[in-house]
Each structure stands twice: as structure tokens, then as C-alpha cells.
Image (cartoon, rainbow, N blue to C red; front, side):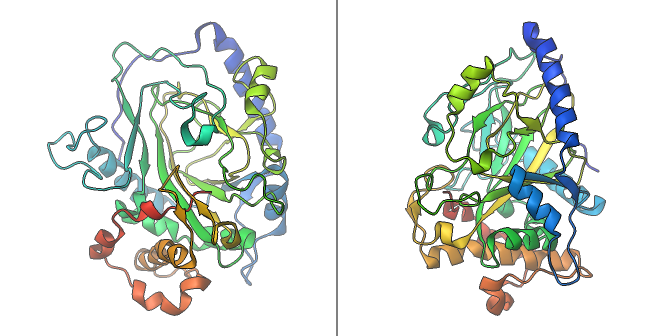
Length: 388
């Protein structure tokens, strides 16, 4: 596999809080591994997802699907991630990469590459994303030789990576999406999270949904879910943490929860413990967040999510991942074409695999026959992300 470039620097820790955070990680890990929400993605010959997976996901709001992505596919993904990082802008606002070439996404209207100051929390306690990050995480002092800022998110990655596009068409993961949201499920948003060793910033505790909290028919699946495909695996030090069951409790006062805890270490949260090729599915209504990556390991999460159609159809929303707009049937169908492109691209790389049949575009599948020269058609597709 292709090694990602890394900045070599001394390791940072939590200073006077180090023993507390180490104990918190250890206890969280024990609780996470004792939960009954991990195992292989089991689908029977009729295309039904095993009920135990659906029941555990409904109860806890997340599930770790083990050993889903093959070594071959992981190698493809790693090669493309390394290429995207090599083509990234040299700094925030730059149009050039480190070789002097036009940078990744430099000509795009949609946001492509996001930077963060090492070991910082740029959004906690701010009004960003409708103020959903209610309380700030502890910010650490980066090593003296650390860069001023680092790449942390690549958005709209399906237009930059055929391996990511093929992953988007994974038949097992699409089957699970249909089991949760129905066969006419719709896209959400895609992002590659790159938590660099010893430098990656934190993401304050939050719930993703911002549209339907007061809706009379809201339930635990109203705001959709995210898949997080783990390229290298993750643990309590560099991975995402989730508060089990919080997805079904409505909009919660996270600021008060942090105040009650006396720190940013929410006592009931548990970390995602994953190996390379594992896929975590996390409900967007669940409280989740991540601490600064003080470990010596990369955490690369290839994320993408889905909504049920009735949650987005004829809704006016956006403003976080894409412009505010009306989600008409035509708009949704246009954005959903990425699912069919992913399915068709995957056929070429994995011809012996049974492809997923996506109901809303099944009759038009021939229009999406894939070749690499069609990648240009996907430019700025993420301006149509369906954020609710």
C-alpha cells in the first residue's frame, strides 16, 4: 500500500490532564468492546440484512461493520488519497499544489479542501453550522516544528477519486442503506477526514441534524446516517466517539452536558474501535465528536451518508455543506445520479461482484455506463448535497 506523507515532529499530550484522558480512553474502549454492536455485514441470499444488525443500530445509533472492504479496495483507496494530498493546495486560499500545478479543486465553485490549525478546535462554541457545536474542546499546544495549518477534510471526493466513487457503489453498504431508509434512499454528502498523526484537530461534540428537530413525525432516522470507511482503522486516541442511544432523544443540550461532566470528556461516550477495512455506520442524530489526534497513527475515514427520501423531498434546506435550496424531486434525482455512477464504475473494477440495483435509476442505468473520461462530468456535484 502507498504510504501517506507525514510531518515528523515531537508528540503532544494533554499536560496536567494526560492521566485523566488516558484513563478515559481505556474505560471507553472497554465499554465499546463490550457492546453488542459490532460484527460482519450479514446479508442473506434474498438480500435481507441480518436483523441483529438493524436492531443494534436502532438501539445504540451506531454499528461497527467488520472486515467489509477488501485489501485490494483499500489499496486503491490509499493510492487515491495519497494522490489527492499530493495535489492539495499548499495553504488555505492557494490555487497551487506543492509542485506548482493547479491544486485539487482550485477551479471548483464548491468547497474541496479544508484546513485546520494543528490540534485545534476551530468550530466548538461558535455559530458555525447553525451553532451545533455547542461547547469547545480542549486545544493543545502543537509541537514547535508543526506547520501553521494542515489538510483535514477533502469534500466532494467522488469527483477526484475513482476508487472513492467505486466505494460509493458498494453493494453491501447500499443494501444496508435500503434496509434502513427504503429502496428510494437519497444521498447526503461525502468527505474524506484525514486526522494526521500528532497534528489532527478535534471536532466538538454535536448532533448533525438541523432541519427537522421540531417536526411532529420526527423519529430516530429522520436526519439520516453516515458511513465511515476506515482506511487504517481507528481507536480511542484518533477516532470518533459516540454517545450511545442519543440519536433517539431529540435535540440535546450538549453545552449543559459538558458543564455537568466538568470537562469535554462526556462520561457515557464510547470510541469507535475499528481495524482497516471496517465500516462504522453512525446515526446523524447521535451526539458524536473527536479529540485532537495526539497518536502516531493516521486516521483516514472515507465518509458518505444517505437520507430517506421523505426527509428531503420538498424540503428547503442546506447552508452547511451546500447552498440553501428547495429539494425538489428533480434536484434529488440529479444528485442521486452519483449512486448510479458509483455502481457502474464498480462493475468495471469488480466484475464478478453482484451489483446493487438502485430502484430510482434502475430503468436509466445504461445512461450511466462508466469510463474514466466521465469523471469531469462530476465537477462541483457537491453543490447539490442534501443537507438537513
